[in-house]
Image (cartoon, rainbow, N blue to C red; front, side):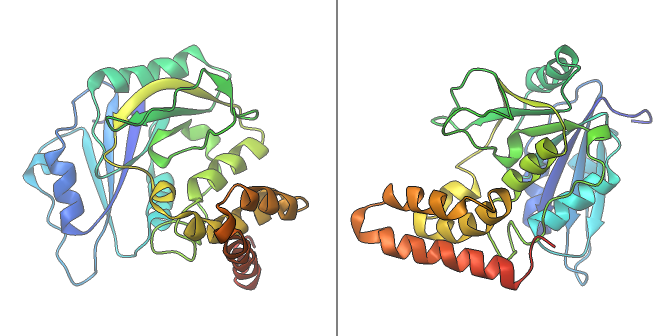
Length: 265
């Protein structure tokens, strides 16, 4: 695809198993859409691109020799060329209709540079009406494969590499990224359009409440520097009585680790 794609799907993966998952996914060929694979591989392993990908002109592959989901996504943002960028993973499947729907959603909302959609996995749907991301409905949170934005809005915004797979904190990078864009003045909305099928749940959903409390301590320190103690206690009171003290300890441990490692420098 020689011209700048209207929509570029940024697929992040690691290792040979990851690239094979992408090859098996049968990504649809859609006019104006490019699939951009950011592939992390150990330096001592040859990066052999499967023929199902190499033979398509709507695929682009970049190889990197590091680890971690946030560094991978940052490589993708550095190299992306599409007018609209949709964040993705190697185990996500799409339809041509959904890809055209993403393009149309941005066309209908020229004032917005950030849109968050929804994924489905057979049992999971975010059943919310459309809303302004600056005023989210109770219970909503962004999942990585639901985030799309115009490339012109990316600027210097990047994922915090202390958060995500193979990082100090195993989750929360998408929330920090979205909140950072909104606080910089980027206008965004949640659109109740299902854009993909994602098996299972996000990383944050797979962590136990105690495991997630450690990460929440760091996230809330950044997002709510003056009010995080009260928010911590509110969240702790929602936990089973026997785990509340452990929950607070995990949260405070996350705050301490974030400060010690200076993750928001």
